[in-house]
Image (tube, rainbow, N blue to C red; front, side, top):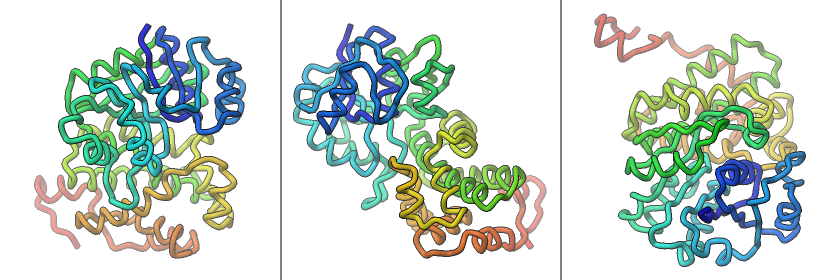
Length: 345
């Protein structure tokens, strides 16, 4: 039995603690509030993952140094906007050879950085070899109930990815490995924007046709931005790309979709986020992606319209009209232009 520390005690952190504990690891969660730590130590995270009896190998504490002491691996299960601050607090207490696993699906708003870039800035470029990302289509509510799930562990070092795979792999939680850290991070973050959009369409009472179009064209623009930043095309056809996009855009477990539905029904951004009552990563990510698209010179029309709905008070129906009224396009420009020699109108 090895010790695994998890920084964070929300729904996803708790569900992953359950997976690790089932693999006979000693799991210690760090919680900000004593009441939350007490709930977990009594066997149930009543605040974030109610109704699931926690494995006896799981404990919680509010003392960060105590939680991190002698941990062989440290999982960061906190929102992306908290990552740098908690990483800075944690680094003095983390073993020099511990593997760091980030499970947040977001980007840093102030710097436009991926979270692995934040980690490298704080821990040093050399430490990236022991850094991994766990991502893919995985709602905490289902993972905590042992519903079969498949995810991907990504690291620039294959041995680190395999180590994470071994830590988490169970009968019900299948882990693949992928060396494309950039693509896995971007896929996990950017799909939240499209989930906001499909939620808005649902709130407007549009149909399945609209949702399918939003998801498909959303994946196209996620891929364009990813390729411009060095990601591998194949990653976006995998679990961290289309897999996570499907589950986040179609499930009522999705915070981003629920937030979008509320906006589509007429609530303000602030009211919609409050109605979800948990962090909605896609809101911050929309702002970051819009800035990255401009920096990279990449066309992201869905992201642009969602940005305008969220931050410029564009009525959602007008955003849909803007998307439908765009000029004529080839669906797959790269193929059409290189293979068939068509020209753009």
